[in-house]
Length: 191
Image 1 (tube, helix red, strand yellow):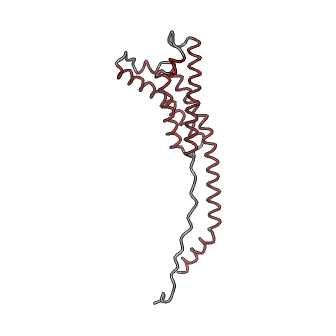
Image 2 (cartoon, helix red, strand yellow):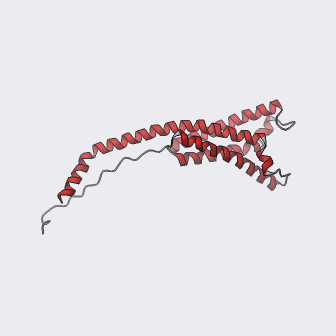
Image 3 (cartoon, one colour):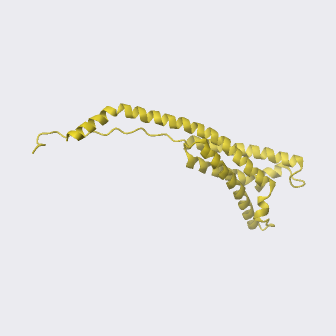
């Protein structure tokens, strides 16, 4: 046979570099965004109460402990985290569009959860439409959208840096292994 006396040598193919994502840092920034959202929303709530646009006799302490404050914050956090996980290394345009979804999630989610809580507690149930017209819910949605846009800018900027580093890693790996690839190709055509 033609192969008698030949030695078989197994060579492990070079392993390409592992590309980095933006989900870990993006998630941390989303949590920071939730804290920022809570602080801005609390500040605007304070202003509404101080100016007298809230319910008569409302206090800031009652607002901070009310469903109007406690519901939108976790909804914002969950929606922001989902956006980060979906967009990963996407550009700012993806975050701008995603901020609309975060704002809508806070708007409709807050009204929906509040309606559910009113129903479960047996108190007077305002209609879903009535809840959607509440100033605090509207403000929560607007603040959610704005905070999401600007946190998205920071996440997208890091995503650009991660993409650039990944491209550098792949280019460097391809340069290092170009000779090996050429040898494989020559051996394949010789056979």
